[in-house]
Length: 259
Image 1 (cartoon, rainbow, N blue to C red):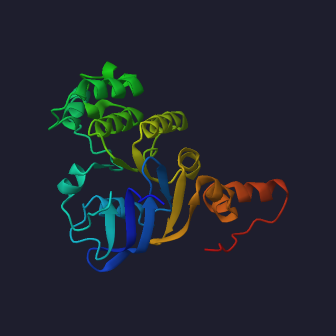
Image 2 (tube, rainbow, N blue to C red):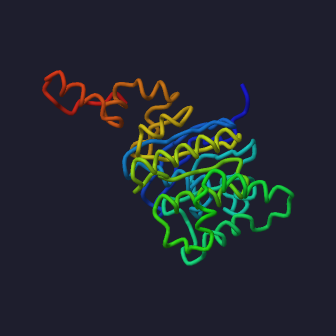
């Protein structure tokens, strides 16, 4: 079996040095796949991404994180980024007072290779609106356009691992669908994607595999098909179980999950 691109091994991350946000979390992400982490608010999903990216000082307290066979826990975030790990936070991390073109230029900072023009063409081909809005300030864009800009800028870093925190948050269903279509396009380039999302249906339709994170622990893991077929996942995250019971006239109740 091939070595995973990312291996998270029994990490424990503390919040403000005394509250456990992650308890013994382990997962593996294979090169070229889209892996999604689902879970409710407060489950530790964002903390997981920030721990991997090295953005939480002195975290994880326990466990190990390996990227492409190299141990990266304890390294500064800029060193992890240089290895090809690019993190797009929930707030998209844009420089809102700068224009679209200037934000994209920041994605090219430090690059001296011959692929710059080709990568810009790829981003503009995926998101034509960014070319049209090149001179517009980022803060004046719609939520969907800002997410496109954040994704486009991230791709200009040529990530080996693209980590996304809630890319559909606050977007209309049609716009969220277009963002996920772009993620599928990015995935076809060979870029590995680790995706945190609350819209379980969109995420599982796009991902190859995934995990359920609840109260800082991984409670279930499998292929997207296995997760979508799981009765508890369907009931809690896809809203299918309750709808089926309602149409059959059964009494609704909150059943006890088996994880």
